[in-house]
Image (tube, rainbow, N blue to C red; front, side):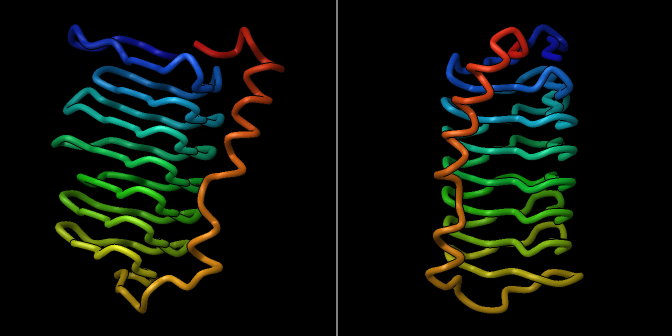
Length: 169
């Protein structure tokens, strides 16, 4: 479901795929080859949200913010996450059930571990592996972790668009 709010209508790239059971509201921009799976909620009602190209947001994740949010390119946001931050850098993975809170900036090429809770106002440097409650930078990501991010999701985005042409907005 894609709905305007307060005079702002979401902008979705033609190549993106948005599940019919996802909810995208207000001042939201979704880039090329993005994929929003069932149950995703992106609420651009308080402030704008921009999602960069080739980004995958998995089932039941929520993106909402009180100040601008920018999600980079080639980002994977896992199942059941809560994203309430200012920025997530390019080529970053946010694993299942992670929470990233207000005014947080996550650098590029990071991995936020499953279940991590990143506290408000955190600044996560590039190439960080972050885990725990509250979350802490444990080390730099290794080569295997760096390769986890988004490439294969482009295939699924294209396949879902072919199979469910009428399921996109």
